[in-house]
Image (tube, rainbow, N blue to C red; front, side, top):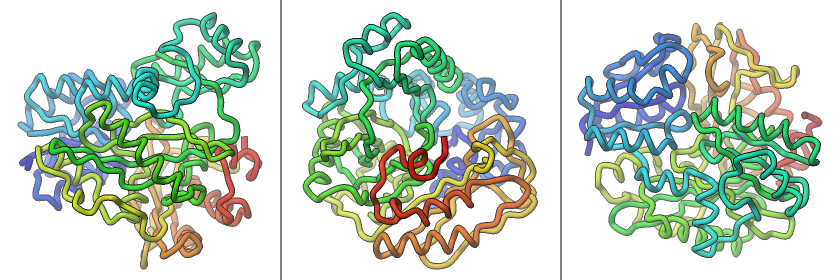
Length: 449
């Protein structure tokens, strides 16, 4: 096992990884931008190193700065968390070139599966169903228009790198193509340092269901179970739950088999997530693979009694998956995660950075909170608006919903606006309570655009 690990991220995921390392007896190094110098993860780590100014491109996206920090601290490995450089093959290669273990898949796997256009072609070859899409990267508006004429509108423009809904645009007519194409490329370049995009035929009113996978160097390839991530706004997930209320046992097994096919076809190692679209007829299609830990990983941990971050560290250090002997997994109970964002839901979800004057988290049975905030913390305007995650667990879905309502009412964050009131409205919605929702839930059921 590693002796010292650097966490190349910030916020709640940095703290999550640091805590896992502490429990495993691993010394920790945090990196931070000048803006984040007094945040809790920086204080919590054994060592902390400033890697640049507030803009991410000069700090959390700076490969030379992070590698320099890792070498100066003499770490064995770097855990990238999610976002930033987590799916950057050049970063994984830079780690390898400097004798540092990247806690994640190989650069080749990241290129093959992290680049979503290449991943689609790989899935086609191994027999996993895919949504009809462009043959690789679309380099111009003219190419985009040509694909859409053939496939038919609406279509979805998607960044080949990264995730989190960045660089994604729906195009409903030829008149809107140029604007959305250029906008998607601009956003993708700013978020991931890669502005390449591809296009897919848009599956109408799908559910977004994903399978968590783990794979080690000893031939253990396992799928933990599925998560339903259909509650989204502009392709950004807001609420996730496990298991999915939409899947039959037969579909659940078929998705798990398809996910393992993807892992084996790419010789994948470490944790990853295979994301599918489930249409109204119960057919599923490969959408993309996230070659990293997911924001929503806690719901899977709770219904399978696993620690995915610790498994990542074990796999990267050359050990076997500790929970492999328990496979195949079936979910036990029900878990729901609410992403608490520093946004004003009454003002079109506008960002709400600022000083947190009071921070009180809910406690009690079946309640878990992941956050880097404390009273007196400042939420900066430079990064993602996610400030906390509330995860609740119950013996069944109704129990989890009831616990979610109780916990959300106890969660107090003052000084900034958050999405807590919005989540309470979601839980009161009839379609959500019945588990009968799709990715357009926010627009069609909540009246939010």
